[in-house]
Length: 374
Image 1 (cartoon, rainbow, N blue to C red):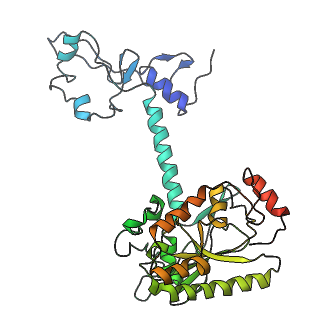
Image 2 (image 1 turned 180 degrees about the horizontal axis):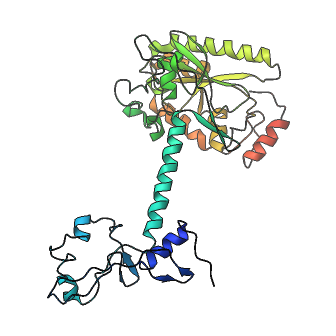
Image 3 (image 1 turned 120 degrees about the vertical axis):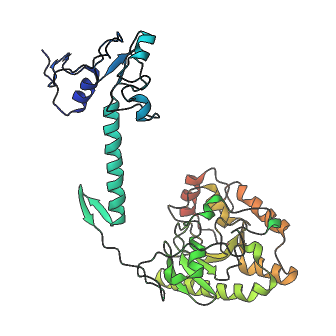
């Protein structure tokens, strides 16, 4: 004979929901009280109905578990009301027990859902208190509070800045828009760093002054890769540049070259650096890339990554951007669209020009190529 299930286990709950009170299960008697019946009203001719469960068509309904999506007053009407247990009218009319919509094992499903909610609440509470797990043991992590501005409560998170003069998008005539990612807090990380570098989160600030902010690229595409951000709030990309910004660009170039010279002094094996902008930037806030030409980084994964720095898609600040601003007052949308088309060019070595089939072959070739940079 089978052993009776352990009381309180999921199996026993499921067996209990399938067996009337006091009944026998396949594995033995369940420890239940004797059944109680509810007699029909005198003179009504109705039959006695067990109050725990009504069986019909493989479904079970318990007064303790009303079907989801319906209120208890409808499923358990008061005695004397139409369809209630006192008159038995609906049962006499149908000639069979009322059908329910609650499937077997609903109690188990409710218990599992309650357990999931409890675990989620526990995880959220742990996250809010800075709890980490190591070897199955919860460890409280001390997080230093962010420096607060004057008149602000200590530990207040830095606000995500709103749009500058409207939505964070380039001018309508430039022919492109930032992705939906730019509307998230992570997508506006450069905007936050430019507005207040002392409160920037998620970025490593390396220098800042009243005109620009230098940060390390979070996903560097070379051994040395940094960004110089313009602090002017209306400068979201190269499409916003005008002739009056030439002095600002020269200042950004000076700070970028100062950082690259310091990195080259620390690591003499680094090749030459280039400073420039992307024709179609991925994040708002005008930022100048300063990047070493080794392109030796695990973050350099795709053709778009490589071509965005080794083709005319990368707009050299000194040779391309500044001369056009001085000559025409702004960068034409046609020139920028033409530069953006180079992102689709076939892969080729930026040193010797040899065509390459894929990114693994690009990386193998770059380790061996000794051609001089153009």
